Length: 386
Image (cartoon, rainbow, N blue to C red):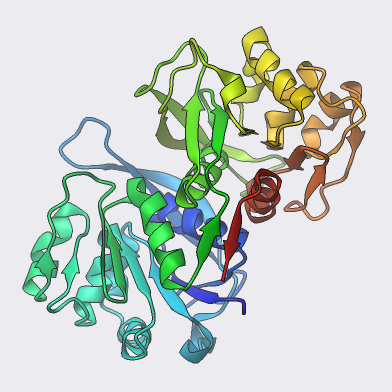
């Protein structure tokens, strides 16, 4: 039976903390509705990029625009199996909204899974749901959570997660892999075939969502995922770009999160990986000029191993001569690369449409992540079952 989840949204929720679980859960076959008080399906919530940039607290900049797919006033709690509350600044005012608290309390009364991350625990505290419960949160939320009667669990890392009964709490989006895994398990999910090693080819100003969403979604189901970038080492970062449509003739670009690499490109044994992911954004424009990068992409394709490439990532495959005779799509502006590279062009209509041809999965843009990830894990032999 298909599971259904409600995500409680608000303006300036943290960008990753809504989109990563939203698209990951969809990719795993779960129905997900996103709502915000005072808004209806089709409206947007603005998001915030929160990260540490050397100051005493996190910095904030504008994130993507997140489109809601359901209306708050039409919520029927009985149709959902669980609720998820992203962090960011939205919970500060959502915790003051009695209609929000009423919805969350109904999930608690039904003993349905409740997952909340970062500042989302302000909502749990306001709804009187943490009394006597073990939980964690972003550190500055501690005084409120403790005053609400929680057994506070100190976080030795920003990736810390805690489960107590039907309540799952996390510190920040760094902990998404465990946070999402615990949530899937609370919904009755089981994961098989996840003993796979996946390589990500990264670069400066790759698209923010197009690296982090598949990266953490694959980690959440138990894959070992290594992200590398030419001329950089594990622990170094790549700046990312937020690409969004905001009424201009082409997408806008804003600074995204800094993405931390967890493996080193130099000395890489690419043959030891079971699959390859190539994010889009602006990075592929210059990575396609690096023969070390194109050699890796070509090798995966020639060996018939699963390869997933999205948006502008197909520029690398085209430069590698790996698209000849392959049916594929890409961001529409990359059509020239695909066609001249010998690929058979497939129109991405609608933009979230993704295609699999043999060992290759291609997508046009980050709205297609649910299909993109789902098709890739199928090639890897990973299953999420309920």
